[in-house]
Image 1: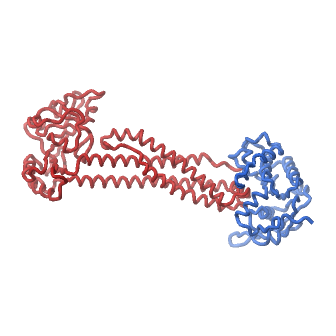
Image 2: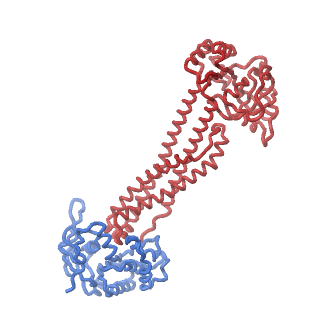
Length: 223
Length: 392
């Protein structure tokens, strides 16, 4: 059996809301192998995004153990987590999150600032070409369509050659045709050997994934 | 898409800081000129002078209960001996014209010794001779400023003017520099001391001030007592007796108060600019929470985020500080400088940019601005990336 790249054991997350605690996740046990394409589904408020944020190390779990490639990251320091996010994860967000003051190429190369100024331009150019954006390098995000902006965001996520691609509702701001193109693109990237974890509430998109994880009220109901 | 860094607002705060710094530099340069002018004036006046003055001092021509007359001058000469050079002065306000327009001008009747004793420079021509003074000749000297106001424009010289209806030949021009308070004025005409008023030319004008210079050096308090004793008959406790050191004390006190005021106002201006910057940066942090979340997701540490906002704020400060300093220096040297140089009130007070003052101003700016940038930068590093990305 392939050893798990991501391993969650009894993960929980509790938020403090005024005087009371709100349990967002509870008793999550999950293994995801390298190269797997996983879709996380569930209703609004089921804990999908919280789970994704914990996987992305943007949130620390309140309890449990999170191992990435065998390394316990739930207790790692701030600097180590930043390095992990920069080197091992790529992020695609619903709202693209491109910086309006930078052009397309600069946006794609943004992670270079947090890896010692490494020159990412060759890799960025390759990905922009692969995604059909080579003619838009000097454009500002505001000059692009939603689909083009999301493809720029995917190029930014892939430019560091990450092990895991995390996508949070990547089709949420796109029309269905463009959304389908983006999902196809992400699945293609996943088939090329990367682990893909995509969060969505769209059952049609989820149906295209081999593995679906379903959350309800902060608990795994199908893994 | 994440919003831009709002360059317009940043530019406004660069401008705000630049204006603060400009005011700072100009105010300090101006105060430097004031101090230099005061020092120069008092240096020219010397430390060996005493002025006995009626409280009214001839400003209004109104009768004053305290009197000074020629007999007082004689009493002083008798009491003080040769140790003091004594120059009586009669000051009044009188109509003066150069043919067409008539103006009310301060008229000084004085001995020839006054010009040197009071530190008044004769920039053209000569002072009265002893003969002219003794014979009450119809000659006069005029201050440099009166040349223009009475029609001596375009380099032409006044040769004859009418003082209180009496025609006087202009034999020299006196610098308009004020050496001591209430003793010289910008626009003035100087006549020989014995020259009488228009109504009764044979009668001498009333003495308003007596100028004394201690030939042996700086006069002591005992000299003041001897002067007051000699003038007891006229004094009645109302005459002002000013030592040169009193002027120093008065002027330096005024200058120090002005310095303090300027310093406080400059600090308030810079403080407000820094507060505005802090406000702007805090708003910027709020508006860029999504960007902060993104950068953390891409591998930035909280320290990177802190440094980014601090650098951004200090960039604004640096730009504003340098822009304001440069503009302030140019304004001080090339706009205010000529105005100050041409001013009678600040004669000799050249505007210059003092490197120490500039460095101190930049240091104040750096300290206040660092504090202003530090708080928003701390706010930025505390942003929860998970929430920030989700809420965008």
